[in-house]
Length: 196
Image (cartoon, rainbow, N blue to C red; front, side, top):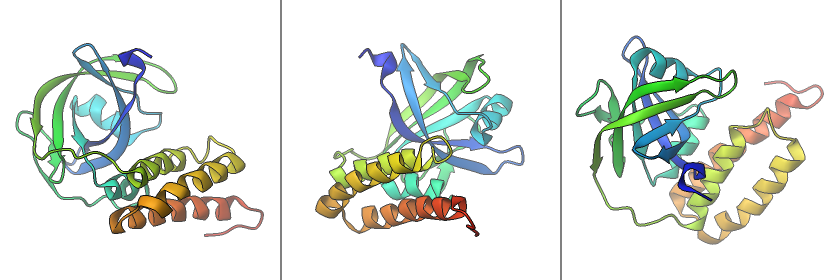
């Protein structure tokens, strides 16, 4: 697999028109000197980047941020970016400040080709344990609830749960509970007679 096909997971922060910060997990690719973001339509992140032409890519090891963003917990501490209008996560191990260079439009997933304006490392990355990786995979499943069959999601969650049982600490357990709760709520609402 060449490097252009490898997808890395990060937290992207963008600015709303009113200056508020939007925080979302999003995969990205490196293509030469560019960073490529491909959010699905419709997307607040897409709208914000197209309007503002900037974003911050935050590399984190606290998987509660991934899980929290997918389950309505968006209020994570931020700090001003250095060279672009926007904010980075205060807890990021590293961040990249991006400027939109061009758009390769697509009706489903446009490609946003971004150039790095500034990058900074704030703390060492000590690696993910298996539970952290399982939470990130569960977050990806939770972001595709309308796209994947229920039995596929349930079988994947059951497999990922083994890593949670074996290697999770308190933060991973909290994040896992948020994501599994969101998945269960979704299937409850989709069941015949389901309600909020």
